[in-house]
Image 1 (cartoon, rainbow, N blue to C red):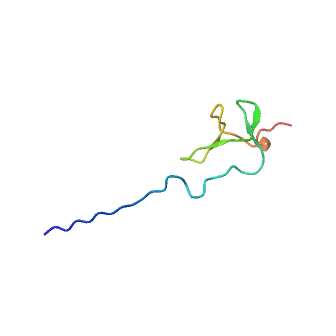
Image 2: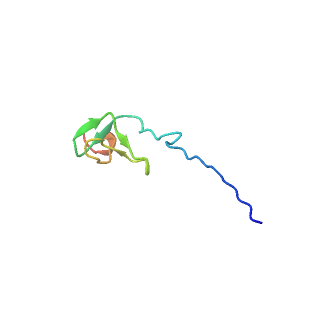
Image 3: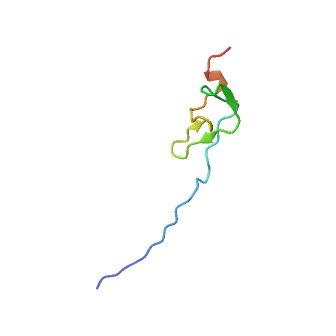
Length: 65
């Protein structure tokens, strides 16, 4: 005599603690400007420019000055 069971599992629709960009300004080397509202990839947590999709850098990584 077989026994059956139904199990319901609800997955989260958004991460509980979404990653935040590091402190300080971020710079887009492609747009050549500071980005104040970056986009964060949900899969790999990369911080990218909303306009062009280029990964953002902090000004100290650019070697300017």
